[in-house]
Every structure is written in C-alpha cells, then in structure tokens.
Length: 128
Image 1 (cartoon, rainbow, N blue to C red):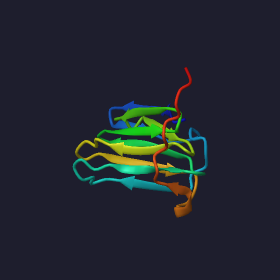
Image 2 (cartoon, rainbow, N blue to C red):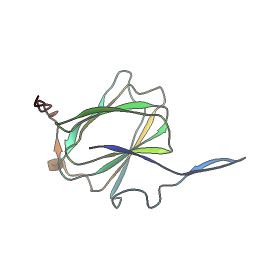
Image 3 (cartoon, rainbow, N blue to C red):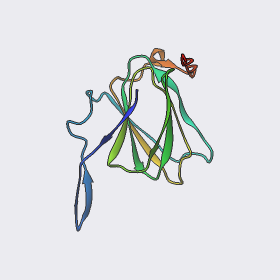
C-alpha cells in the first residue's frame, strides 16, 4: 500500500533546498512532470503491475486516491518536502489540483504500456 516519505530540506536566508538522495526504495529510470492542469481534471486513473512510483508536489497542492483492492485511501500533497510512494497494484488517481500545481513523478521503470491497467479494483468485502 502507498505510504509517505518526508524529505529533509535545508533552509537559510537564500531559500530552501530539498534533495532526493538515497531516500527512494528504487533506482530512478524515469522522471515526468504534470503541469498546466485543466480545471476539474483528473490524472492517473490506473495501476502498474511492476512499476513503483514516487509522487511529489513541487508546487501547489492536489489529492491522490489510492485503491489496492483491500483499502482505499486519500493523500493530500502540498509540500515539496514529502513524497508519496505508490506500490505496484496501487490504483491511483490525482484530483483537485490547485492553480499552478506541479506534480513530479519518479518511476522505477521506463514507460511500458503493458505495465498499465486502467480498471479501478473493487474493494474486497470485509468478513464480519
């Protein structure tokens, strides 16, 4: 299931520096940005079979819905000092982007269309 990682930032009178160094649970193969997002637009809406991703809110804010078929969670991202690790089989969709929001994604694999499934999992019924 998805989880948050806090990233150390360094501040002084010049501003803040946040470095992604030895904190991700994978080697980086791909980096992408989502920006200039249309009002009310949703992004994502898929899961990966193999890929692990780290999602960063570089600017603004947005919400990420995660559904692994057992649990459905929402994460509100609004700080570049935090990232959300999205595991394989975590269906994810991003929504409610603030104006000028920038999402940076970092992936453990190169793009491969066959690694995507766009069907949201049904939540398993809880036994009483």
